[in-house]
Length: 507
Image (cartoon, rainbow, N blue to C red; front, top):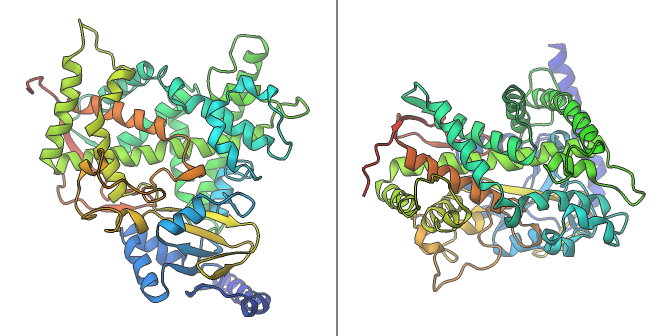
């Protein structure tokens, strides 16, 4: 009872202070309509509950019906302005970083870290256009501004491993790893949970290919902790025993304890000349030097490792789970995907059973299915940025320190952008007579804030689906299984499927 009383008093005091401190500001600002909800909590609980029930679009529609496409609320502990529509997407995703910074809510900041790439600030908009041209070896020759150096170093190190030229070297390794994992996960089993399997698969791909973590026991321990850490990124920032947030913070601490010895070992191997700085992302980070030729800190490396792992495995696992779900429920789509993949393997010469970069480029229909799934069920519902100075949008003032939030739903399901948006139609991503306008299709962000890992995700998804449909047949255990967000969209029961090896008889 005393514990509950402390919480109640804290909330009341916070509420009164917020009223006193914000009174003058509210009177001088033309803020959008809406409600900031309860003290500290805001409308976070109702937002997360709507996401869990896959009612996020309805949550937005209820508020836009009252207040229009620009409204205020309070999410994840911060006052927030939500903007809906193509113009709003462009305002957020196209803004320079002296106005809007990729600052994350407190929960994301705590899990990702203060030196993650999302937190490294500066006027760097132009650099994002050209960052793919940089590699680790070219940094010393570039005249960096010191305030932008950390961002550029980290961004360049990441992109050097994610650009298409590098991805071509990963295809064979990725193909073998996926085959091995699928065979292991299905060995002596006729039923598996597809969601867990896809999460393990994408986590192991990122760990092995991007970070060079080959030990299965280490990857297994890290997988469990990352699962807890990721859940905490979209939770209430309440650090009390038993909360999702507390469990996430402890999981992050264990992740750090697991990775620091690996960094020490890699650093020693690089200094001895036994390991190239281009071997993996860890080695690339360890080889970076600042303007004083000093190595970057372990904290910076750890923060960006956690951030990149979350970004590189969970969202891809979502898309793969949704692909399996869609192929289970739509026989026509399944047949077309299977036929495309069988056609590719049938044209191989000799006995070689190896996926190539050229074959990946031929999987056009399979990728259009993935694109349409991301349109209708975007893995990322939306994202936050932080206002660095008082600004305006849509005739309203947005105070410095507030968040802004874009939601893919605002354009993905807009009939003025996509014809018959509620119908699943992969052909809309062919060379259409009605081109998709900029900032309207944003599963990977847009403009200068396009996700640098989008090509890695495409290759990973296509390689996995290729192996799944050519190696196995499957069906859903629960055909009526619904989609829920936790906070990402997943089949609510974990998508258990009955699976068996494919007999090569398809023509």
